[in-house]
Image 1 (spheres, rainbow, N blue to C red):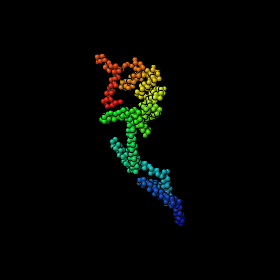
Image 2 (image 1 turned 30 degrees about the vertical axis):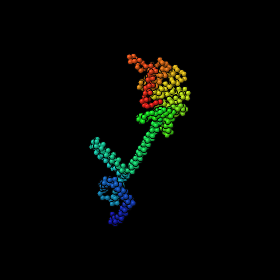
Image 3 (image 1 turned 90 degrees about the vertical axis):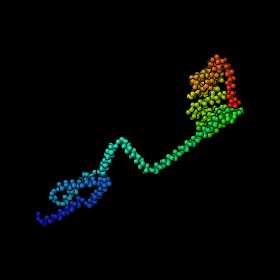
Image 4 (image 1 turned 120 degrees about the horizontal axis):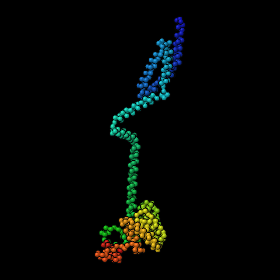
Amino acid sequence: MSDKEAKAKEPVDAADEGTEESKGTSPKEAAADETRDEAAARMAEALGVDGEEDAGEKAAADGEGESAEAQAPKAPPNRASRRRDEVRKRRGAAAEDLPKDRNARAKELLKRRQEAAAERQGRVSSQLGTGEMVEDVLARATSGSWKWIRQNFALVQMILVGGVIATGVVLFFLYRSDEKSATISDALAAAVAADRGRVLAEDKRSDEEKAFDPTKVYKTSDERADAALAAYKQVVAEHGGTGAGVLARLGEAGALLDKKEWGPALEAYNAVSVSTLASADADVKGRALEGMGFAKEGQKDLDGALAHFKELEGVDARGFKELGLYHQARIQLAKGDKEKAKELFKAAREKLTASGPDKGSPFLSAMVEDALRQLDPEAVPPPAQLGGGGSKGPALSQEELERLINQAKENAKKNLGQTE
C-alpha cells in the first residue's frame, strides 16, 4: 500500500472509532450508570457493608482487567475495538452478577450479622451458671419493665389514680353496708326484745334488779304483743327486702298469732315460707310451716292444719320430723281419731328416743309422753318420783310432787320480787 492510500484510510478509521464509541456508550447511559453506582454506594454505607462491596468490586475489576489483558491480542488492531470489547465484557459480567432483588446482598449481610450476634450471645450464656442466668433474665426483664414504664408514664399514672379512686369507692360502699347492717340488726334486736318481754301486773323489782335484768316488762300479754308487732312492722317497712326483713316478717306473724288474728298471721307466715331465705334456711321454712298450721287450726280448719303439719314433717332439719308428728297427733285427737293420734304420738316418741338425750328436745319429749300417757297409761312408764321409796323414805304422790313444784316456783318469784 502506498503512503497516500494509508493517509487516506486513517481518517476513515478514526471516524469508525468515533462511531463505535458513540454506539457503545451514550452520555445518558453513562450518567445513569454513575447514578446507580452512587445509590448502591450510599445504601452499602448505611448498612455498613461498603468496605466489603468496594473490595469485591475492586477484585472483580482487577479480575476483569487481567482476563481482558490475557485474552486481548498483544497487538490490537486499534483502540476503538479494545474499548468496545471491554465495555461489552463489563456489561455482561454485571448482568450476570446482578440479582433480581437489588437488596438481596444487603439482606444477606444483615442476616449474617444477626446470626453472628446470636452466636456470641449463646457463647456468653453457655459460660454462665444457672443462678447467673436467672439473674441475667431478671435483670433484663426489670430493665425492660422500667423502660416501658418510662415510655408510658402517663398511662401508668392514670391507672394508679383510677385504682385509688376505685379502692375508695369500694371501701365507702363496705362502710355504708356495715353501717346499714348494724342499723337493721339494732332495729330487729329491739323488736325481738319487745317480743320476749315479761308480763307482770306490777313490777316490784328494785333498781339493782332491773339493772341486772334489763328485760322489758308489760302489764298484759296484749300490750306486749302490740309492742312487738309495731317493732316488727317498722323493720319490715324499712328493710323488707333483706334477710332481717324476712325474719321481722316471721316475728310479725307470731305476734299476730298471739293476738288471735288468724288471717293476717296466715298471710305473713305464707310470705315467709315462699321467701328466698326460707329456701336457703330450713329452720325458717319449718317455723313458717308450723305457724301456718297454727293459723289454720285457729280458723278451725283442721284438715288444712293437718296438711301443713304433714309438710312440716318433711323439712330436712333436726327436730322438725318429730315436731310434725306431734302436731299431726294433736289434730287427729281433736278430730276424734284416738287410735291414729296414739300411733302418731308413739312414732314421735320413738324418733325422740332414737335421737338421744342430747339431741332430742326435752320439752317436746315431755309433751309427747304426757299426751300419750293420757291416751294409754300403759304405753309410757310413769314418771320418776322424788324420794324413790325404800330405805330413803316413802315415795311422793303426784299431787305432792306438783305442790312442791309450784311452791318452788313461788319461792323463785319471791326471791326476784315478782308476783303474777
